[in-house]
Image (cartoon, rainbow, N blue to C red; front, side, top):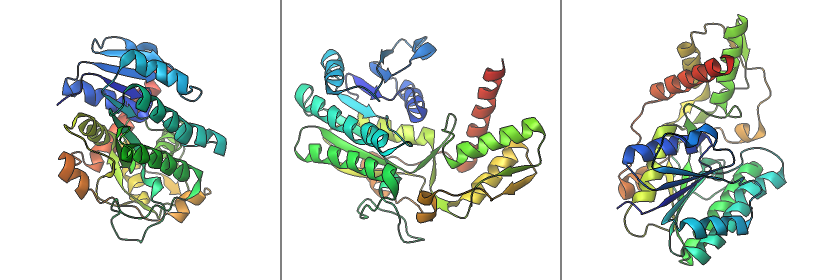
Length: 320
């Protein structure tokens, strides 16, 4: 059963854009989208309404005012900070979640929160083993720590029955609009620059790690399934991934092939500590399949093509 009104925080970001597209396909007819700069996105979608709110600076009173005005039955939190200093990460991944939960408990108690978490909350795991939701969290670095703290806050509020909290631990989403601070995003930027300049090589970091790359549209479908599910779901954690581990080098090679680049792929750039400390990730997705009947539908080749086509379109828009 579809809730009467859905509120999406971070609707202008990478995953937020894919969630918007997924919601349109469901026919959900009362969606409130929150972004610091809606821009032209607000046009031509009669069932969507936008609120301009900078979540990096918004406080509890701002969120309470938004909830009081809209009274959503479910909230999807796609917002989050992936890089920056400790203060920025804590503000975007912990304080915002705490303020949101307090506002929801006071104004729309018992409503559903779909908190978009991260596989970075798991950290290092045994190589070769799929990661189930009961794996003990062991995050590496401030990003994983702050995402885990946000997830734990949501689950605690769920246990207190203040909200119906479901945490989706998303593995490595890939698709159009991806950030340049991810391996697929960096690779696309390097390929575009090399092809534009006629260069015969690109430089990246070491590509030995394995990651679970999942299509961003599949992630959006999982988020919508969690928001739409009837009855109380939480508090609980569900993995969202492809269920497959892919070597980073294979992903980069495939991207280069789609781009038509046949030059050298050098692995001579510094590699982040977070990447080297987590050489393997593969999601166990049995739980979400059983509870929400969700499974990834798109193959990695589709995701790679969508990423490259989106990057080409963006480049054409910038040069127009």
